[in-house]
Length: 163
Image 1: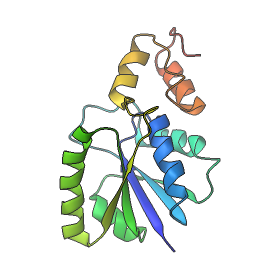
Image 2: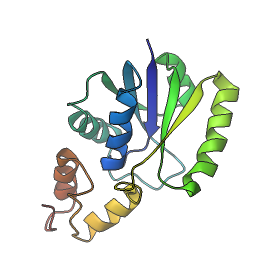
Image 3: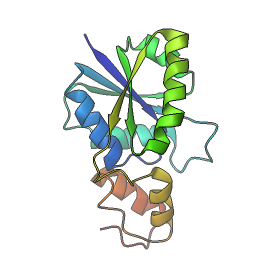
Image 4: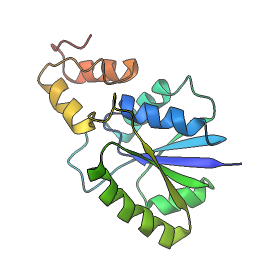
């Protein structure tokens, strides 16, 4: 069985992330989406449990998707889920430098390859940190996130124009 592992902080999960999951589901028998607590990033807006719930609701239409929450080395998770490959979305060339370095480290540590999926131009500018900022100041993010995420953002930042 071919298993693709898609890691990320997903804070929040957005349409660019969803695109990567949908496209990976065409390649792999199972896709494991791993919401990671990343200590290198600022305090998260959503808990791992909330992110898990939003991802599950957003990916409910995709067969063969499993969601996990982790706070360990990615290569440990790859081993635990028997991942064939780690799958990463790329928005721009600037993403590639950092992702390439991580891919090489992960392969060196575990032997697991990384597959890069470039996002479509429709999603290449979407970033979770931008969505958090727009939502915090009452902007409408509904075109950039699945409905379950839009609703959670509206609950976090009431009074904005979320629809």
